[in-house]
Length: 61
Image 1 (tube, rainbow, N blue to C red):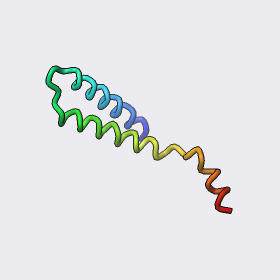
Image 2: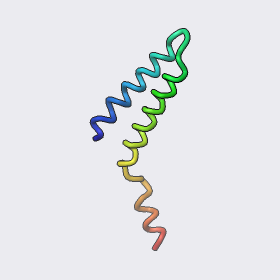
Image 3: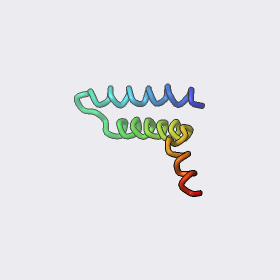
C-alpha cells in the first residue's frame, strides 16, 4: 500500500506547486492537492512506530 501513496503524494505536491506558479491559480485545485498530500502523509506516518513508545511503556510500571 505504501507504494501507492508515495507516487500519489508526489503528484499532488507537484500539481499544487505547478498550480501555484500560474498567474491566477485556482484556489480549489490547490486545496484539493494539499488535502491529498496531507492524507497520504497521515497514512504513511501511521505505520511508523513512535520513537518514545518504549519510554512510555517503562513509565507506566
